Image 1: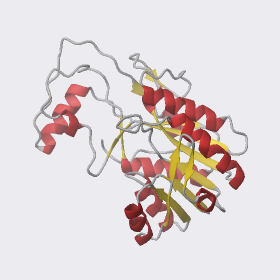
Image 2: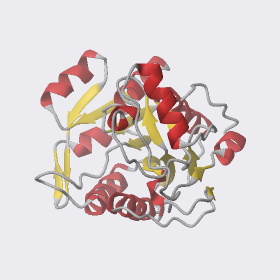
Image 3: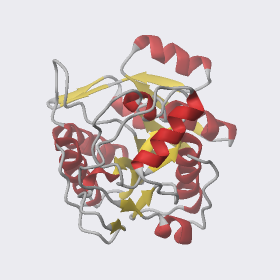
Length: 265
């Protein structure tokens, strides 16, 4: 099968390598010519693509030629000196997918589309994003799933952890942190890749899945323990603050895909 990955970054690049090891032909995109060399060295067919609000720079037609499944793994760019409207970028992408006759799209989204109402969240929960990023991700999900030319599965990842990436590094040594009792929702890179592989292998298209490790300790207990484990200054929480959070349930993913989480967060 020929698969394209739009966004070969922290998740997309190792995913591409695993797909290639399984015998798939993989096209991978990046916005950096230097990164394109890294992709080529790994045996991935590289494409330098820039998707903007008003158009696409690069050989998008060639990138999608003969592709059956596209993984969309580009985050909203809403900060910095050149923020862009993510929904408009997805609107630019859709006609290219239609013209290329792509059959399936796997859209990497986020559990930020859900509201922190201290409940257990399932795929049946009506999304109510509080952040601009969450709002644009939800709108993009809707656009893709409403396009009849291809089937879109939405994969909503919780906080990402893995090599060189863990939220405790941003919290270490900080004081007066809020929501000490809020539950933690995280998922390891290896589980992210394994879940994506299961969706592709089982051909589970046109659906929505939450993906978070089934363990949900409190923020204070978890990050204090993790900081100690990594030799970092422990974060200090404000015990007088209230709790605003949610538990992301991955029960549907475990039942439908028969998936068992492999990594400890």
